[in-house]
Length: 230
Ligand SMILES: [Ca+2]
Ligand SMILES: [Ca+2]
Ligand SMILES: [Ca+2]
Image (cartoon, rainbow, N blue to C red; front, top):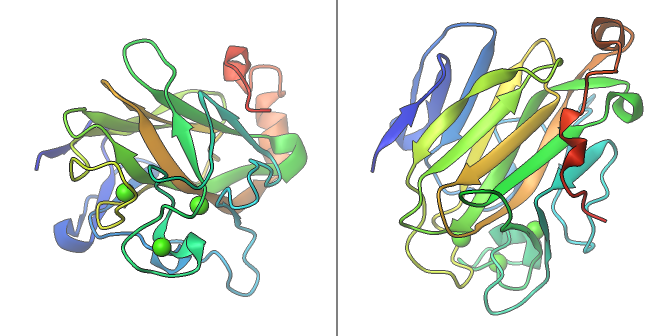
C-alpha cells in the first residue's frame, strides 16, 4: 500500500508510526482502524476539552461552526458506512449508523468542511475526520487550509479501503491535521468514485480576537460558492 505526503510534516500513527517534524503544522494519518471516538488522537471529551464531534447520528450536520460542502448525509442502509460504534455496537459494520457521502467535484468526489470563526470564537488548531469508504482504485488526498485560506499541504495519494461497500469498518482510517495558527477548512478528495466519511472533529480553538484581527474576516471561507449542505 503506497503512502506518501505532499507536505512536510506528517505523523503516521499505528502500524506506520514514525513522526516527521517540520513547519508549523502536522498531518496525522492513522493506519489502524478507527471504530469509535476513543480511537481519535485528540482529547475529545477530557476535562476542559473544547472539541466538537459531528457523527451525523441525528441525521444532520449541525455541530457549531461547521459547514459542509460537496455531499450529503447518508442514512442507515445496506450500503451505509458509519463509524462502527455509532450504531450502538462495535461489530465490524456501520450499516445502521449515519455518515456523510461526497460525490460532487470535477474529476472526482470532494468534500470540504469549513470552520466559522464567528461561531467558534476563533479557529480550531486540531481537525480531523474518518474515511469510511470509497473506491479501491481511487487515489485519495486530505488537504488543510490555514487562516487566510492558504493551503497547508496535503496527505496523499493514499490507497484506502477493502474493495467492498457494505459497511465494513476494518478499513476505516483517521486523517487529521494540527496547526497552531488555526485551520479554516479541510478537504478530502479522490480521483474517482465516491467518498464516505464520518466523525468530523475539531477543537483546541485559537481564540478571537487574534484570529479575527489577523484575517479581517473578509477573505475567509472563500469556498462559499460550493453548495452548502442544508
Ligand atoms: Ca457497528
Ligand atoms: Ca456516524
Ligand atoms: Ca468502511
